[in-house]
Image (cartoon, rainbow, N blue to C red; front, side, top):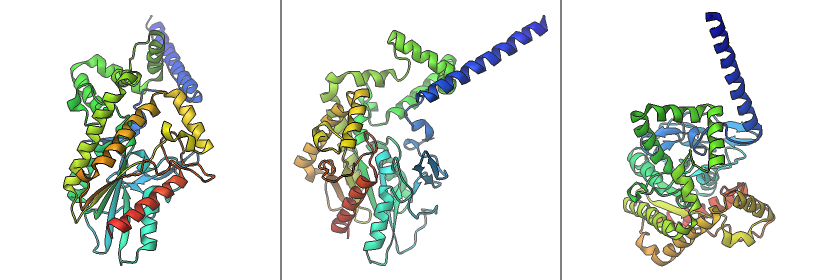
Length: 387
């Protein structure tokens, strides 16, 4: 009797393992997620200061001919010629620039370590400026970062301990697309940070929620069954708040107003902490939008149309936010700018493409051509405003 029970248990275990790997294989060849993930943020590490950040001490890598940066012990990306060093120490002739932002600033679909905006800017500075300075441009960008995370990293880590001479922020897209909380007092944070906090609270009180969360993120069979339930019943089992928000297009205007408040609130603090010793430059970045569709390169139009089919509200919601920010910067620029803080609207920098080259590698990220244009713009601003 015991042998029969043991045999049945072993057979069932093997059957479950077979089903699990079969589902993983089917999902993989279908180019679908195999377990529950929050975008690509799960590949990063929880950070007490910013909610999550790049995993430190990673090695550079090539996957399908796409370059992925190494990181130093701080989680900063190692671009260009930069090597891991102790940033709490500094040579007298070193001029240290930090670039922050989301994945557009960090770099996506890179060709090599000299492709990111940071590496391009560093080369221009060292090649063209003869001031007995060694320029180091440190890429502190991280996927999906919004202005509150950039502010926290700048104020509480970079200025506090890492001896910057200049700080540059390239942002706007993630503040436009990252949803607000239903309770507005929680909204000056990334949705991942809020979810992480909810998970801690629920896991500590509810063992079944902990099991559900673990299985969703690790077992394809369980994840697949939940997705089938979602598709057949229309009941959201993953990210209910965020996904319902994306369907409510009637709230675009009110949401954009609140996102604009969040964006300018954080930039006002940056303005207040900028000094002669450490100036701060913020760039409201260029992006694909409905209003500049006609001027896009044909390859970029195809990217736009494909993404618009899968996420029909993405570009429309982003344009509402971009218009509001651009108009506000045009009318109230003096309220933010001072002698040591500069906020520049370059959202139209890539609007008119008269070349035979595209500017985008996907719906949000730049390619080498546009990274060169942006780095040249920043270089010229440094020459005109800093030196």
